[in-house]
Image 1: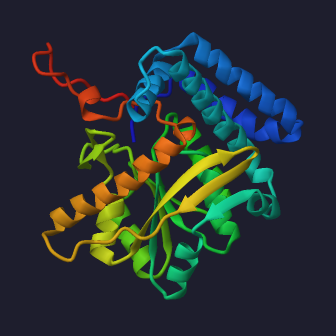
Image 2: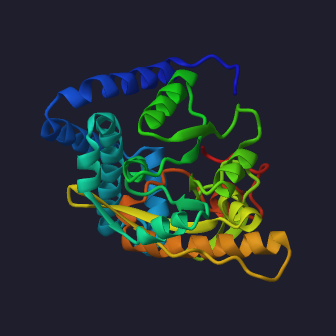
Image 3: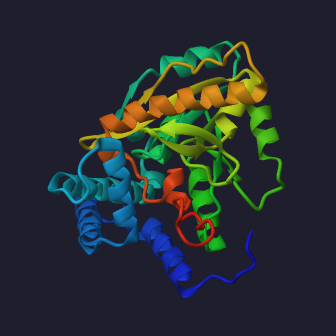
Length: 316
């Protein structure tokens, strides 16, 4: 955890989130939904760094020409989806379990329930799509609380608010950084005990991830999900999430198999590539609901051959 004091911007963001959780649930949903959609459109029209990065990422996954009208409209839809996620984050604590379950359109839930019924643990691996917090609330409502890991946000007050929000939905939250350094051991203990772990799995934040091919180019993904499957024997299940009208949709895929032969590193690499291949298909089917506003591919993170200067710092 950084000792650097929060900036004015950090404090304003934290205050805005606090106001969102306090105020948004008290207002008519149609009004607040329209306000968030309008805010998304304003951000899209300004075309700042994050918007340009989302557009570039969507160009990679769709093959649409950079700068094309179709790509611009897809980016706009992506921003609306992203802002819808935050709108729903403020609403989720006030939603009943009946509403959360009733508005969920789930395919493949038997892969979770049948596996857990045997006493075997599960690792659910998700890309940053749709509303992953709502999917977690659905799983808790179905009787299966779980453990996850959260990126350390700035300022610390915002991180604490987010942890409290997720814990209020029934999750156990471990910090990615700034904890006791034993996250993997805790996650392994959960799945070895027949429990559930949910982890975001297509963006590496540690610089120690596993290299895979993703939409035809190299990137790194977190080692945690495939390593848990290899080391503990837990079932690794990919989950794809998207919006379906006013409801939430997600598909739980079949277990990613662990190869019987090879070193541990080779097995982890093979599992990671199989996992990301499932993500590819899901993102290609629902690109507007993939919320990736950061640099992801290695050739975006590193200077190309002959470029001046040292390796650039990854955009976080």
